[in-house]
Length: 255
Ligand SMILES: C[S@@+](CC[C@H](N)C(=O)[O-])C[C@H]1O[C@@H](n2cnc3c(N)ncnc32)[C@H](O)[C@@H]1O
Image (cartoon, rainbow, N blue to C red):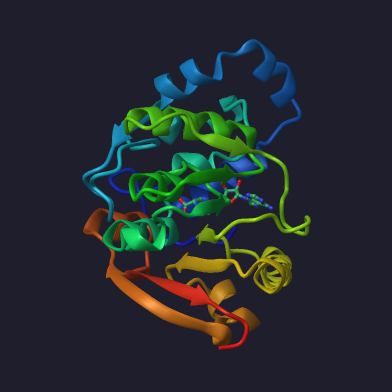
């Protein structure tokens, strides 16, 4: 994953942070997970935050400089890369857009694909979506999403951990993609699958992205229509060095 940023005051950027976890990923996840209470682990190793994002009305359990694993040796982390512990700028813009335009979600069946902490799924639910599914291939993200739904006073989340990209498109009215165009291969498989969803189901697709190179240079980019642009809060800029704003796009292959 290519991220550029600087997480102050420890001067650890998001890229280094995630890379460190990736390098020390171990096969001990399954054995440890069966022993650990993942909920307790998340509670103990994250902090409830909200005010400093683009969606201060959404509370989330995230990694912050006050958390042990911000500084701790990554090899002690027992799970996969904790992408769910970061509220990515693309997801922030997408969630802000939904909260500002609740009619987009109201009464709809919504899929938040690559949901991470579940923020965009939460925003959809807060806007009155009839059904919301949070999908992330990281099973720990599902636990974090459940906790974040509770934190925001919502009924239990519906979380799926299978890889839906390439699967038979289901009846979603709206698919949300926050910061999902960070690898070329993933972007291309997403592009193909989204085309199928739109063609066979008439699904609406919204994408949040802060201008990552893998997104800007991908073929899907010229097929998008910009819906909104948000200046990133100062703290988010500091954490994501080089990124200053994040945009929301609507994808329709015929555009
Ligand atoms: C950069 S994070 C974005 C998280 C969230 N949407 C946000 O904006 O805060 C990307 C997420 O996509 C998930 N992911 C990667 N490939 C996936 C796939 N094929 N299906 C579902 N989730 C996937 C990762 O586990 C990670 O949580």
